[in-house]
Image (cartoon, rainbow, N blue to C red):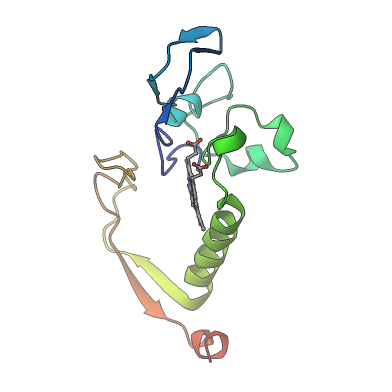
Length: 140
Ligand code: HEM
């Protein structure tokens, strides 16, 4: 969600009147886009910004995590963030618990992003999965 936010530029916003955002004059009818991707990698906000270190968020209160906005922020922030986060946890947990996974090649996983609104991987990760018997208990 930090290094590869699904909505890299969030959702475009249009100013209904002249306003000032972050010290910048924004005339009426301006389309404003927020580059969450860049903010999530800003070295002024994140130590070692391009490294994947989920432990950064351990014990962090929401207010301590500056510059993390995969769901936007403020009045027009995503109202589905709670559902989205829970669904991701449930999906990931189910994939790990219910399947055995095997890489097809031995290359290091390439996380370079491809083109597209929801930033797919440029080089897709190919894996084989085999269903585990526990799936019968979970989805029975
Ligand atoms: C991981 C999952 C999700 C991500 C990353 C995500 C991300 C976002 C982002 C970035 C925005 C724009 C915020 C802004 O422009 O400031 C947004 C808006 C919105 N999202 Fe999500 N979202 C997710 C899941 C959901 C779900 C599950 C729902 C509904 C069940 C939902 C409903 C909405 C709605 C209705 C808006 C428009 C809010 C408004 O304009 O006032 N989203 N979402």
